[in-house]
Image (tube, rainbow over all chains, first blue to last red; front, side):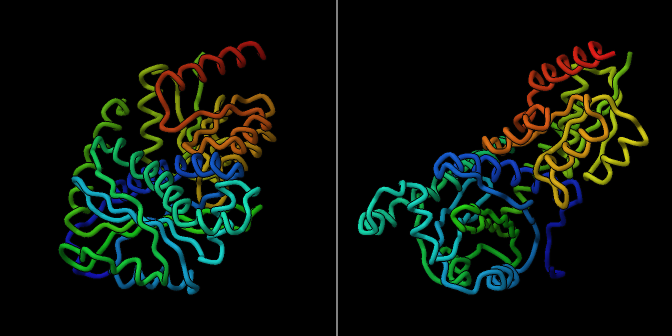
Length: 214
Length: 126
């Protein structure tokens, strides 16, 4: 974390954001499990303010191999990007899990791009929609885009950050043990959005605490 | 009699939301809050709660493991496992422990129904 951060989140604000992400990802996992007919195991989300470089490094340390990501941009009071990321070598297995195992390899390869985009779309949308609804905000979510490469590429996409190099970085691991698939969901927001999010989160905390003081 | 509810969630905001719902349906209940499974086990001993509401996705020991621990300590205590992760596997494991799965965010009606049933069980078993 660096000293240039001009938004400071209180412990309760960070707690509230983590809880929102937890809600969103849990919903997403429920939907994913329905699609693949297998349990999806989640870790507790990690939410941190860090520099863009640190965020890329964090991802690079965890996964050095080539990756596939489904990427969506969200816009509204808060703007940022969300990615569903997993190792490229497991991408066909994920597609197979979603479309069923009775298809031939050729058919699965043909469906790959579309199936990945649609899977990512369902997961990221259920996650983002849950967060937006809890904050009583609206987000416009772009169409999914499938990307391949290293993690550094995913976080230096256009459009570049509006201001500053500090981002809010969120990530959660998920795993489907029977199919040996694991990956993670990551979200990044830059400073202006963080400040807007803080306002929304403060309102959420107020709504939640009104009747709890006895 | 006045009952005591143990609320376990690593998120303070989530505990606040439960307290808010509790205050609107059963304002006379006492409550004990715990931010982790370890704190919850200490509270079990120190405060002897009658009913427990446990979040599923917590760091270290998750809510289903905690529910199993609570079940060993008290075979008849009504336990609710709360999560937005409503996968059948999670619901099945909660049910296998004799716990009730409650979807998150917790609606006031859901909490009221759960606690009403809990009171019925507690009074029936006395």
